[in-house]
Image (tube, rainbow, N blue to C red; front, side, top):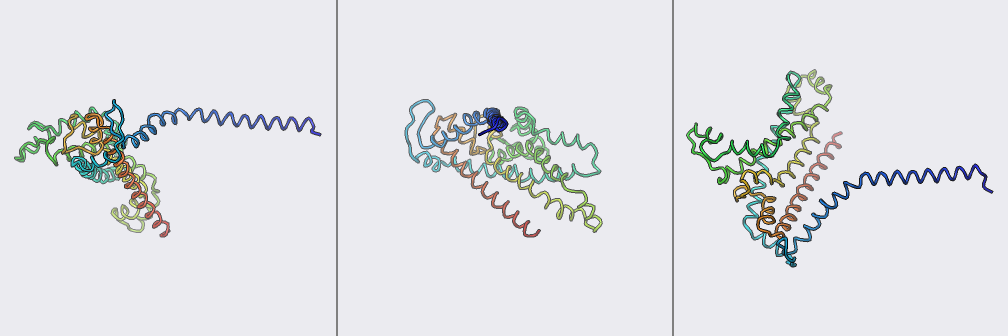
Amino acid sequence: MVSNSEKYTEKKVKRSMSQEKRNSIAGYLFVSPFFILFAIFGLFPMLFSFYLAFFKWNGLGEMTFNGINNFTIIFNDPIFWKSIYNTVVIGLLGTVPQLIVAFLLAYALNAQALRFKNTFRVAIFMPYVTSIVAVAILFSIIFNSQSFGLVNSILGVFGVDPIVFTQSEWGAKIAIATMIFWRWVGYNTIIYLAGMQSISSDLYEAAKIDGATLSQQLRYITLPMLKPFILFTVFMGTIGSLQIFTEPLIFFGGNLREEGITVVAYLYRDAFENNFFGTASATAIVLFGIIMIFSVLNLLITNRLGRGKARKA
């Protein structure tokens, strides 16, 4: 026979479990808005884009099954391959110097003798939070195709004729890459700086006692300890360079030209200017595949470096 105290204990346990369930439900309700919005504005467009890649659709009329013809069309389009080439070239021009300069700036900002560090940090990070409209105005002045443009004025001092940057093969790429460099160098500088500040000063002091020079400290302490941060910035920079869109769109004023059109700009033009949503979706899938390949390569390199480090330890 169950006593009254046992019944009370059983009721208390049930009440406690129901309270745990209520807490769980409340937790799910609090986080549900994010998942609902992601499903509507993130997951559904992605899945629909995969579906749409096999159909012919102008955005308003009836959708017609087109098989793999959308992929055949873009693979036979020279502008598509030109956009791939432009994306890779602009990505290299805008990302590689950016990471090197960001590392050097972070190293300078981390120096003990530097004064007004906070002022310099804010100044370097400012382009990252600057409005894209302001960026467009600034670079339209710097790379103005007329002789009074800033770059053309400097070139004119050395007797070089004015360059029409919007119609020049390399002029357009250099201008867009410079814009990317200017916007993101501060962001990567702050990441490297955070990594450098996480390195124990004891390591540098021990190296100085052992007679290590500044370059040896940089080579044998700073760079190895910063490896995770460097891999992160390279990983993000690679993905970001494959998704360049705003900069060429602003630079060409909406009239995307072959000299600077990127893959994302190519699919944007197909979808929202030519109303070829099928080929635009096929381009998006190809771009997705390229990004996945680069991501896997980055992961493989990261894992290999990590195993090498573990073996040395």
